[in-house]
Structure formats: C-alpha cells, structure tokens
Image 1 (cartoon, rainbow, N blue to C red):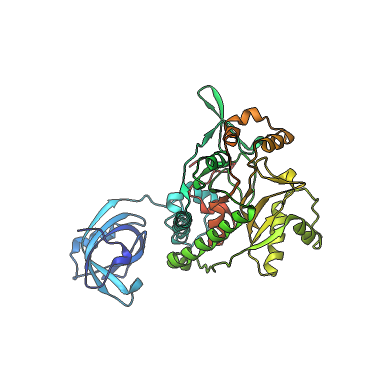
Image 2: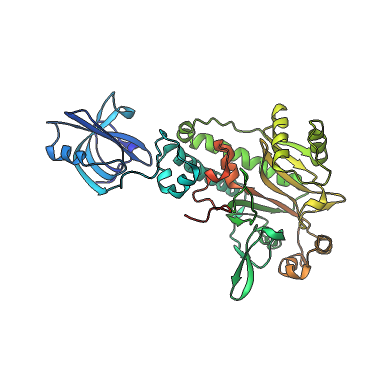
Length: 430
C-alpha cells in the first residue's frame, strides 16, 4: 500500500500514514493522538472495544515526536481536525524520540533563536517555520519560470575564483593547490564574459560570500544570489524592466501557489504594479534632507537611510522603487560611468535593498581606465578583460538577494530566518 499524506485522506478510504506524534490524549476508554507529516495533521482515534487491545497498549507507550506508521480506515468526525479521523488497524513504531525535547516548536513556549538554529531540524517541525521554506521553494521556482519564459539561459559559474568582483576586505580567502583563491562575492565577472559568447540573456542562482563583520537584520556571510545579465541593451532602463517583470511574476505565482502557507503564517500579499517608481540618487538626498536626515552627496545609503526612505516612499504609495543615477565613485568599476554619476541602480522594497545592478561598461579601454582610477590592477583581471577585446555588445544586469526577497514576501524581520542553516560571523555550525 502506498503512503498517504494527511491532506490526501478522505472519509471511507483506507490509508497508510507516516509521520510524527504531535499530541496524545487519554480520555479513559478513548485514546487518540495527532499525527503530523509535511502536509498537516490528522487524528488517529482508538476506542476501547473497537480496536485490538494491543493497539491501545501501543499508544500507551508513545511519546511526543515518536516516528510512527499507521494503517487504518478514515471516517468522518466533527470533532477531529479537518473533519476526518483514522481508526487504526495496524501501527508501527519507526523511531523513538528522546524526552525531554530540547526545543519547543508548537508555539506554547518561545524558544531563543540560537537554540532554534542549533536544532533546526526540530524547528522546522513548527508549521509556521516550515511554511517559510515552502514559500522559499516556490519563490525560486517562480524566479526560474520567469527567466525561462523570457528567453534566459541558466548557467553555472565558478564559486572558487582568482579575484573578487568588488575586491576589498570582504573576500573569504582559501588555498587552492598552493595558490591564493577566494570564495566568490558575485558571479559578476563571469556573467559579463558570457555576453561576448552569443548567449545574450543568462541567469544563475547560487551561493555568494561576503566576509563582513555585520550584525544587522539584512546581512549574512553566505547568501543565495539570483544573477542575470542581458546584452544589446539601450540603457539601464532595460535592466529595470526585467526586474519589474520578475518581481511581479514572483508575487503573482506565490499568491496562487502558496495560499495555505501564507494563511499559516498570517500573511497577505498583493501583486505589485509595474513599472516601479524610478527615483534618482540626487532626489533621494533632497528627500531625506527635508526630513533632517543628513547624508553627504557621494555617500552610500546605509540601513537607517534606506529605512527612512522606505517610510517616505510608502506614504507616497510606493512599496517598490528604484534608486538610479548613483555617484560614480561609489559604484564598482564594471558599472558604466556618466560623468560624476553612473548607470547603476538599486531596487528597494519598503526600505530594504533587494537587487543592485545597472548598465555595464562594455568598452575595453574605458573599462581599464576606470579600473586604474579605482586603484585596481588590470593585469589581475586579464581573464575578464580578454572578453572585451573581440566584440562585446552593450549589456547590463543585476544581482538579487533571494533570501531578502523571501524575507519581504513572508514579512519577517531578520533575513537569517529565511535560511536553513545561516552563516554569520558568530555561526558556523550546524
């Protein structure tokens, strides 16, 4: 007999359930327990005289979170969860759970976040926590669906790299056959190289690493990045249009595919309307200045600045908005410069940066010049620069934080809650 998930059980049918004992009740001549699997809960009912005495004795020995399998008949029951209960014919103890449990995950006692991460496999037995990761799964499916339907080709670029896309002290070094190498900050250089290959619309979903000693709601040391690059563009507006479509497509798919999960976490989401508001950096400085938020022209926006901007934009009816025309001096060498400004963009949602990108510099000589002006040695990037010598089309793209996107969809304060085993300056295990 094939396994039956709890949401598939129908009154009048026989079923084989496999899961964990979530709750046990003993009412004398009536015993029942709640079995939980990945799809939900179901009640297993044992009435004295209606089932073999051996099954009642079996239940007497059960404890919370024991793994069991139950074969029986499903019947209607107004008192049971979902209106169905299972009368067992056969039960088997698959694995015994230790007692006491190191973590409470039924919501009665609030466990500390460090304890929850230490026992993450137990933490996910909480339906609300599990719902976050089911939404995460569907989010990545929706991302792929958008790219595939828009003519993008999925690629995989190296995680071990000889040079960082942005340089600086945020690289994780490692020894690679007696040579110095680094975990990638971004697939940036490689996806740009692909623009010279003829595969003129590509994307990648993969881990990236930043050695930043942060303690904020939006940072982790390893995160999942959604990267895209497209060639033959006219300006960064082409990149923003792709992001418009991607975000709207993801939210539309999530609202349809994750109704149960959104209900479990008490979350309602609206599909945003495109195109999103475009807001120039200079206008951001003026807008914040009117609120007595001091920021010098040429400085990057910090978390408090972004939060305040998010509040101001929300009052204007814009949860999603682009910040454009950043100062050239704060953008990486590969972004196309426009005098003192650049063609770099950020996409923010309610005060949190979700994606960053823009139009790239595709002219070899200009690219080398900008690298030198930023104190970089072009010889260390020769493998990258070679791609610009034999016909590089105009191009642009973005990197989007998948974890942050899920964070905003589920409405949770800290990005680490959306990652199974988050890596932070203080967390290396499990």
